[in-house]
Image (cartoon, rainbow, N blue to C red; front, side):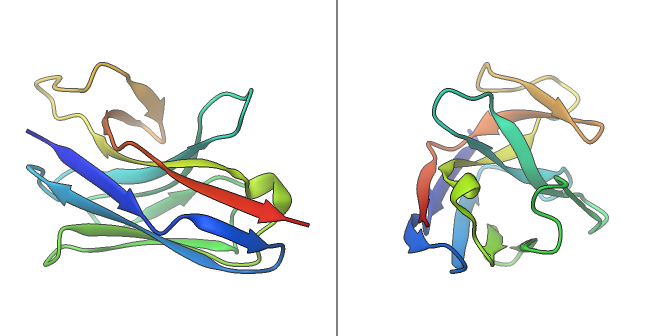
Length: 129
């Protein structure tokens, strides 16, 4: 059973930094993992993803400010967020790609050529101006 647990969210002023962590269990690094966010009243959007070959993908809105990384030995995914803006305020979710057999939590999000189907509970980020 795949379990994803996020931590590291909080409240910061604009220009500040936060690092989110996602502890994964029951999952293999053979697939992509990513960070998503959802602001109140808005659709969930992809923020960043890291793929099995180590390549990364980012939303245009966070390029140059956010960095995704993972520590396979610790089964942990990270999102370093710098130069935070009020528009970065959202609930941030860790997600894992669904394997070819189609396993998922029930909610699927397709982005960057991948189907993300496993989700954490989210960690809130609030950026004040």
